[in-house]
Image (cartoon, rainbow, N blue to C red; front, side):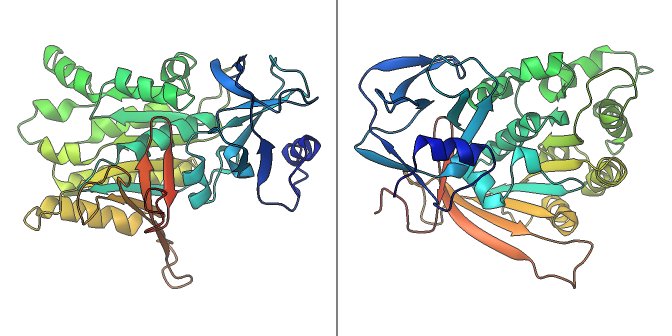
Length: 355
């Protein structure tokens, strides 16, 4: 039996019914404006007493997973009915695979993001928006793209990096811009990328000092954030700039000891796997980080080549680095397709285009 709208409100209030999906009627053809998400959407259940707003494909009947619905409370609604609007959240399927939510994010963990023969930047955008929605203080070391690029993608995922930086929740080190500024400063002035001016590029202590100062808890009247988070995109760039893998591993070790152990925060790093057996530095960095990580997400290209309906596969590995003999590591593998504002995951051979 399909859920009623009253059952949906009970589920959002914490009383979850036994069904695993929601059957909703086909919307009318009239477009309505949703004030909560500031976009045009089709009204579900027109003519009924209770109505909700969501972006859903057209059809006679839909089945929607409750975990993909996000409740917005205490906000003015343009639709009649209860003061609770259901909205499709971004990257809900990845959160389901990881069994996590912004409200229940774990602390004290090191997450390793790895891409091989594909672009794994969508994982960086996911965790950046994830921790901002979780009300965490985020230090983002962006060494690949400009801030405007991350901000445009973040707006598609429902977060504004500009607003987060203005309210002090987000601290960004824009590598493309800072790499030029460091050469026009006196040598006496400290700079996070000071190693670019040194003949022996192996000292990442100024970069660690920048992260420590950005995430250090303060007792002033500033907003109290949930926990500090360090996000790096990506560490392989440091190898390309002449930094040795041992120096990069030392940098991650100090950040993990400070952010994860001392402040009970999280560290998320992206590393590129070139797949070249002659690239020993990349292998040393990747293997060293893998042994320290609690969660590894590895995005890989398809062995059969390019496909417009399946963009790659994602391997998820849960590890316990401090307790190697107590529990066995658990892993899952899914294929995925990157869309405009979300990523869909499915088992191997279960792509909708194939079925």
